Length: 325
Image (cartoon, rainbow, N blue to C red):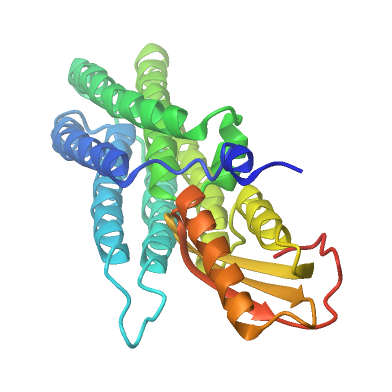
């Protein structure tokens, strides 16, 4: 069996540090605010539906970053009488709200504007303005995207990218990455739509580009909502942590069996753990307390994310529980 220090080095949630997350969010916010203004100005000058859609997209992204920063701050509040396990899940709540906003506002407005432009097409005026704004926006979004990629790549370890997203307990670490990726895709699609409208003389291509952008945003929103929902309703902690808890509790010779190990992620950096442990009948209460205290101290050193560890002495627990929760 792995030692606790060896198990500790196994791939974990893929969450980035709070400081890294804040840098990613602030960088994305600054980029999106500037881009939104430029896109709306360009849309007003050219009459481009795709540019207007991209403006809405940047406004939604800016609001999303503000909500995530707010949720991040709220999640750090200490436990109180009303919330004894703290406010960590507020971050998961606001992450879910962000996913809904992307779907309802970003995707919905994009598709609506695209359909409207196809039904009532009009020529794109001064398209060079759109190309300049799209180029500048791509540079700014690319900078934000590179920051998000760097932070997430450093956090995911040896895991694959998709595996790291699925196992991550820190939504902002992948939400900004998905948003920026969708934004760059949208900018490329908008440029293609404007170019085709200009080359063919058919302004409907501009509307089609808006619809494609909206569909892409809807897909991103679905993935983000699914991942955030799982954390919001309560997910098991990283399996490596659960294995480490079981190993440490099962090590003393006074322990005959370790039953279910229940774990719940209550914040990106906080985990609640409860375990059933069967001790030998002749073990004194004082020795039980000592064993539990030593196990807790060892686990907290190796896994500082453990915020609460409850051990329930229970006779007759099964010697193995493969479906640890």
